[in-house]
Length: 338
Image (cartoon, rainbow, N blue to C red; front, side, top):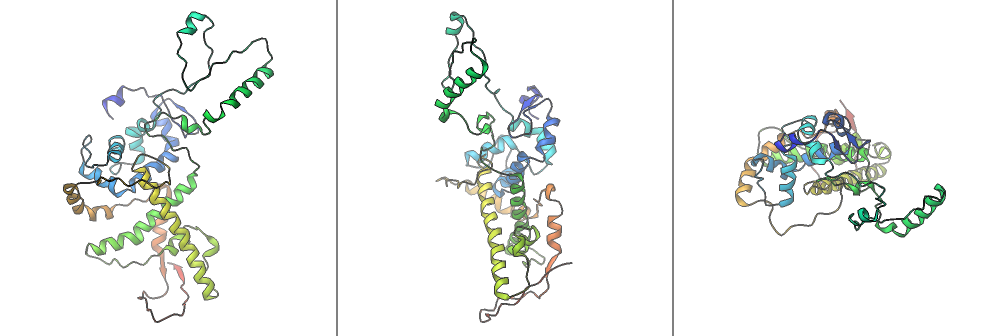
């Protein structure tokens, strides 16, 4: 915890929580560790570039030429050497807390001299309410006035946030974020990792035994396409539909990670490519030496505990074989649990 953080009050306000105001960091932790802030943290951990910055940087000297990535590192710090609970108490609540109190409807002074000294903000309006009118009439008149300014009013309360890292006011579901993270982490462990270690010529057996269909079946992404029995043509179609579902989630997750590297979450927009390189030649040299360490990390989330273990239990009943271009007959592939 920094000296600035120690001098700040424990009371804090957080958008995107079931409640807004918290007296202690430990109070907000109970909601944060199962909410969208947790997934912000988990998807940032999936960024290889962010991990490399963490491994090669000092706290106030991030080793990257990407200003936004450097900004994220200065705020979030090394998120690989601690649990989420530890990180939230040390950094998280300070990263996401609101910097300003939210505006309120309030009564202005009736004295002309005092009213003249009050500054009217551009995104505020003043109204004159005759107190002799009924509540119902006043509410009807206010409604008509607000209708005039409808375009200036915010449709999503998250847009009111003054946090340095505010939640992006888009439609999202925690279940969807969790499923996307599971798909990406299993793909990394069962497909990307064996391929990478094999290219690094590391000792061991790195034969790829997984595919997109297996991942989709394990995570029940499309139950109607799980069956591998019946007409071979229909089996082939079901497999392709399952693989398409997995591929779609992988592409969206890559967009999530690209945006979270810029301090934006959740967002599925394409990040504009900068004309400047993210790392210089010296930094790239250091990264090459860290490649094997990156693949040794377990980036699965404890909220999805058991998924990776279940995936490793699946095996193909057939022997592993190479593709034979001259064979056109579709053979049934049976997936079993050991």
